[in-house]
View 1 (cartoon, rainbow, N blue to C red):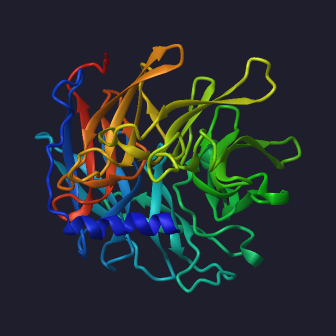
View 2 (tube, rainbow, N blue to C red):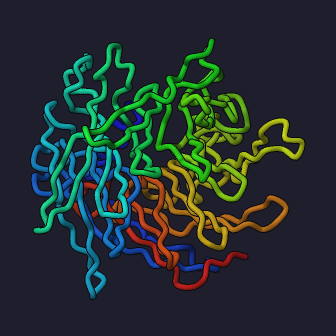
Length: 434
């Protein structure tokens, strides 16, 4: 909850920041990316959202969808929006739904996904009518937005969290759900991992696992981010905390009896080089699992380290999981630090991500970076864009990659209207590095 409030505070801070900075890759960079703001959200407006959250998602026609944590007709309820590209490369925003900011409905959405029919699914951190919620703001919902024939969208509440005693079904989901076969939704809420299954009589929630079920919370607790689903039906994710208060990477596997088994793949620790404070979400690539940690990785950043990108692989003897630090941030603040959200890979195996801090010296508003494997476990690192307030402050979600190698993302604050931005980075040549 604290992290989300800090990200929302970035919107307010960015309104006061008037410093602009040349927002381009260094002049001697071997790769140049063209940066474009697709939309500048309006802070403190009743007609636009503010503080975009979660990755942008594409439909089959090339339109982008996303949510904002605040803004909209209730000022702080948030919105679901669509960005439509025009022939002149100007994108048009349409507000599809304004959350009312009241407990009867969900509000403050934290991310969405889309299915093959164009329906949108997401979760809210607050609102809802969970009977056992002891928070006056509500404990959140899972929702669906369905397009109509006349361009209108209809919202349906799929589930109100904290509907079970002691909130055994979780509450306050902090990330978008994951779509599985048969339209099943997987996600996390409070200390639970859940499954939402559609049926003729509505949606049914099943709690897959309750974290901190082992002594000293050896199985981790406070899951953060979305779950990642592999081809075998296994789920992967991170917890924010664990036995060493550094968090864990875990997997959930379905069992023949219908239960799910949790296995901790790796325990991070505050005093370990391997990082602390998970950045949100994990990525499967090849036979490895990738993610970020906002702290750790050596000295700097108040002595706790400036964050890492990690890789987890099963060791050759199949006797455990090995962690490899792909990149440790902090040696040069201009290169960015405090990585947030996971990384994405293009079809050539190049890696891309964001940091919430570092970059332009006058702002330190974060960067978009790219990395290319050099062999022998080595990676070359390059800043593709450094934010400078006028084009956004604090990029805060996993990047979205299209088939042409263009990158799309959002910033929590900044931009021309102070409410954050949606942006595009387009390579001007094939991504190559020295």
